[in-house]
Length: 407
Image 1 (cartoon, rainbow, N blue to C red):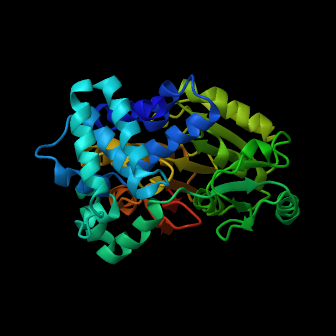
Image 2 (spheres, helix red, strand yellow; image 1 turned 180 degrees about the horizontal axis):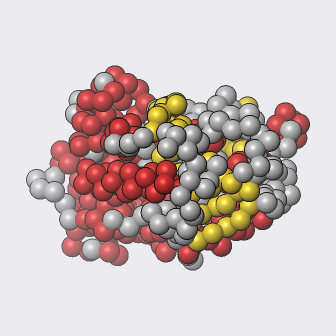
């Protein structure tokens, strides 16, 4: 009951107060045991992934839109019935009991609606955005850009928890053999020579070589972006990783270009300790860490040999990992982010040497944050552009290799 009560509060805060899911759950679960934390994660992330079809399910039995707490309780109770192996009576009674603690006057209504849900099949007909589990505005943007069939296909992937993907910095096959000997399935990723895919929920700290810094968690779509930076491995110039925290891309750059001077740049002071800790564990000894604003970089014009800019974005490509992102952003937010991305690109290009290349990357598949940002650049040439739709083995991602024109 306490876990369901916490889940109701988390869902309410995410949907109605724009609190990030990990923040809401961390605050709610500080006194929970591991098993209870996992159950809270299942309730919250499950509701976020299936929110639109769940709403279509229970709202049939509501005369008006419920209050935030009631809405969250109905979503959690319906999710248990449709997507978990929880007996109907248990799902209903435990959710109602949690509601009695939060809002006793609404407990009877929650009980009545959840019982109606249990007596009916899930709705056979859903609107396209409900079937895709997307906000209407987001579905419309993607439908117009990519086509309805493509969107419905990759949105099936977004409903599932993602595999764990690592960037392994020792011999990949040898490391996979060690993991397989532990009874864990391991598969080489196809987008990067460093990528290894492991089952959902694998314990990172229990894997061989964690303390020794033999790998880091990093989706292979992001790895593919770093691999697209076209430089000789013997490069000994200055490479910047802008917006570097938590350090995965920086580490991959450090292992690719062992002779370069690599500088990891991060503005957020709260993210700096984790960045430094990760780089230390991963033995990135030739990496410097610098706190600086990506729009006001402390470097002379035409002075840097290469740049990776992993710009802030709407996270629309990683809704498997962060399903709360579809509730925390709207069209106005995407427009503001695209403006910020353009500012960061122009600031990076100012300090990039003439005729040199940089890599622009975002974990979003919104065209407005992808090729439309690049179209606004001047005196540049896009050498390569790649948008990866979410798939079973990788996140949604966009990256482009950009060459700065000679003066």
